[in-house]
Image 1 (tube, rainbow, N blue to C red):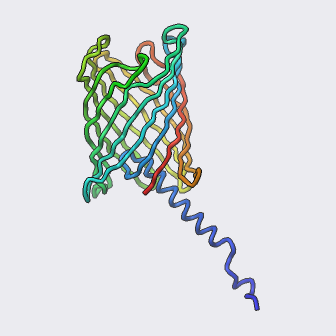
Image 2: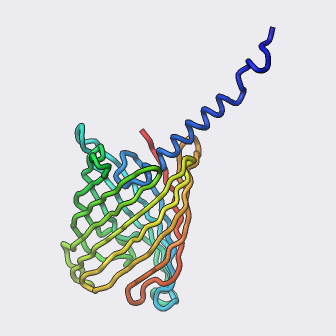
Image 3: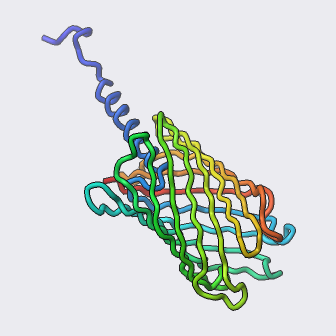
Length: 264
């Protein structure tokens, strides 16, 4: 004898539970991705397009390959390795020519507590190294050393904070001499329960030798999806150059990001 209809289990109950669990997992991953020192292995591929160089005659695009690898160093601390390797293509910086190759690599190490402070502050600090990996004249041939740090808070889907570093050259470039550059990145983002993230940041750098600012402002919308049973975050947005060096980029640009995740 079959059960009356009102006693039968709803056929969609399992699907609803699985959907709720998937949404919670997506929300957690999105929040971790908004944290630069999260205990999460990720490999972002960040494409950027800029134009307006040399009064509008030149343009540039590049992909930043940015692996993030956390390493446990005891019960209370992580060492977060963050690497930025630019793959650059630019045209008409010298009229009629195109350059393609690597820029300089920036390697940062953040010593970060595994748990936030009692006030909810998440932070990390450590050394940063500039490695002269550039090819085809796409960077300054200098080793650099400096300090980097990040601090942020997360609450109810919101993440807000800032990252900064300063790099001094420790070798001399035949053309540019020594360099001293500060980088400031305030950021804010909001992640929905479904894994959608709205983020904005400013990536300002100041060259102390040339007395010049470069200030792109970025806004990106990202979504967590599953590809081949692996979580991947895909995003796109715009950037605007609020300030730039003489002959530098101008106006609007674009940013696309694909981040492969390797959650534990």
